[in-house]
Image (cartoon, rainbow, N blue to C red):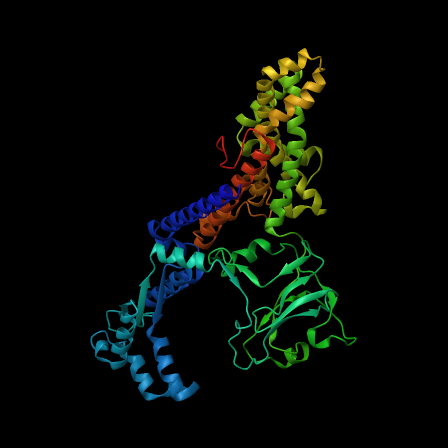
Length: 527
């Protein structure tokens, strides 16, 4: 068993790397990188060389390349010498203006130093000449730029992605030299009444804490860096996007950290467990509210997150499917070719033949007109009613699939020799079905149970789009339409990982259920 698991895990990791690497190759190399600006309003507002510089900035954010520009080089060169007033220095002004003459800029000593310094690092100097009108005057946004660019290979990008996939917060995360007290320790949490793991020098103040939101125990010290969205969610971490509740802000009666122990309370939506370090000096109001530099925060929101919405609906739909599909499949096999079997087969043929979009709209129309259920998720006055139609729409095709396969496997088992022997021993048909046929028929279905449960985390693309469900089902499709490379790669990693885990769990469950299957390498072989 251990050898099997070890081999399976190693092969799964290798498969994951290959799949993610292939997607990165397609996204970052095969597809023209300019597509990322199709929905970028900022890009449309810029012109000439300013647009080119903005493109390089975004290419760097998206992970296509690394680059530095001449202006930053000059800042690093002159600021240590002349302080914050370095921009008024005559030498700085002369060096900055040098690149505006495309004929003589290479004669400037600072330009030569910039090019030589970056070429040693493997960067290539790229000069963007001034964009001039026929009169010789520089156009709007046409000033010259001098850049040093290093294109990333797929292998470098893949290495960086997986080596930074998981990070841990330490007391050295904050680089502010003014912070002298650094620690990680247990303290009484005034916001929950329980103990919390609190840090100083870490990015977050609260590293491990308890609150009233499921799953009740939360952490900020381990981060899964699956990617950043720059097109759809404008610089937000994808883990934050799918885990942040999608409801309205929720205000609670609470105290600012500096007011703890006093009788001064305030109605606020601030989540004080989300405090992170702020490098900027505290304002006068912040000094009254916070005792230290941990002043950045996010807010409390109501409702479920995107991944919670998808998982809750998917899990309920899966439970309904198994609770109805398996018994109905058993009844169809017991009364084979009877009226119940014919009705069941008619439903199976309907649910398989009709396109999903068609029957989803059919069920939606019936549910809204007959049961007066909300059609769109946002229109529900009682939020729980908004889940009814999406859950039914997801459960009905799964019920049909389970009915079909359970019926087939039951009929296969009915013709087996052990069933004939059971009848010869005088067992009733009910006992034969309950003790022998049903358990053996289930062997063929248990392998898919982990995939069905873990698949709930992926969401249902068509169903969520029709009912406007704020879930993760739309995440990949909207990312593909908007060329959001970070989300595309993150979804690939997420979906592939779930698939690999479900296969391993399915094998373990099958080996547990079927005594004929062994995952060991003892005599007689294994699976």
